[in-house]
Image (cartoon, rainbow, N blue to C red; front, side):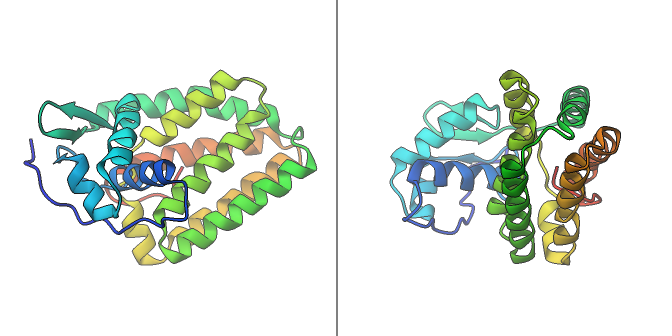
Length: 228
């Protein structure tokens, strides 16, 4: 177990919803490895770095505990949980069972207003990738896919896919952003939306399968083509 350290996190924007901002900031730090596996942190220490009190940090950490991203440590705070190769493979296996057929089923069924919203999210995702803003990148990625899967008509499936997407660690994202290649990968969201709009179910299904497979490479090295 890695002893408690003092990871350096940038302060939050006070104009945003505080609890949600803290949650997104901490989740991004865990997903990208900024908060390393095994690190033990306290709510007061993280709150000081983020420029907020310990209360919203503690609340966010409890939510992340339910997501399996951190675990409570008595009298110390929270430990960032480790994700093994086997666990990543299990998450990937379930995602491949759930998401591709769902994406195939929504092809040709998404109304124009939601297609426009999907394209706006895809544009935000690309802009965030170019700016190296991984919090916004990951947030818009989750929103885009959740909106798309909402048209499958199964809220349980949508929630499961979203939860699994959030649990996947993508330590290679920072490297892709630094190399300037993350924006090219993010642009593939528009390809997916085009396939859905055209009613090309098989094409959309194949594209999402490829994206999910890339997560394994992104976890360790950044050898992937998308943050999905």
